[in-house]
Amino acid sequence: MIDGPLEKTMKRLKELIEKEKPSTVISVGDIVSRNMIEYGISLNVLIVDNKVMRKPIQPITVDADQTLYAKNPPGAITDEAWAAIRSAIEQKGKTRVMVDGEEDLLALVAVLSAPEHALVVYGQPHVGIVVVKVTEETRENMRRIVDAMEESSKS
Image 1 (cartoon, helix red, strand yellow):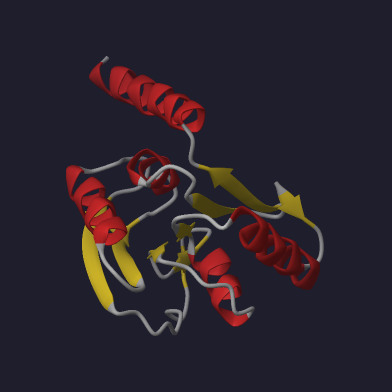
Image 2 (cartoon, rainbow, N blue to C red):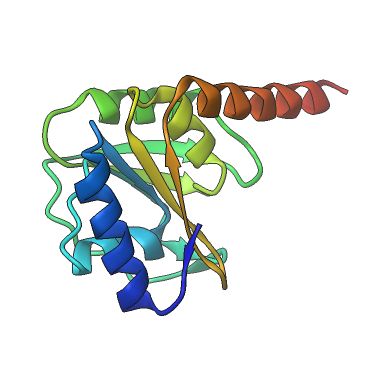
């Protein structure tokens, strides 16, 4: 978790990325994606839904090499979202995944789909940002969460 004033937070994130030299940087969420772009932090994939706290916002301006689209309703993770994120991670250049619905749970998919040592960055409203380094352990943790969600949706 990186918290504090925006400028300090983005500076710390930039330093972390320079130190870690991740294979891939993925942002999930409109505000965190916009801030990373505005502060010159390079990213490979951004997953956005043109909403903040479920309220529509002006779409962020990003010079993406390609844009993929996926439907994903609130509180769900669709096969379409999985496919779009996997495809985005495999692309060269910067890829935007535009979600029709909600992208909140897609950080789980990003961690599970990203290569080893990638960084997944997402916003924690009113707190700061969360940075997840993709390792076998973080993937296992995310897999348990997704499995639990699938189990509860069956009952």
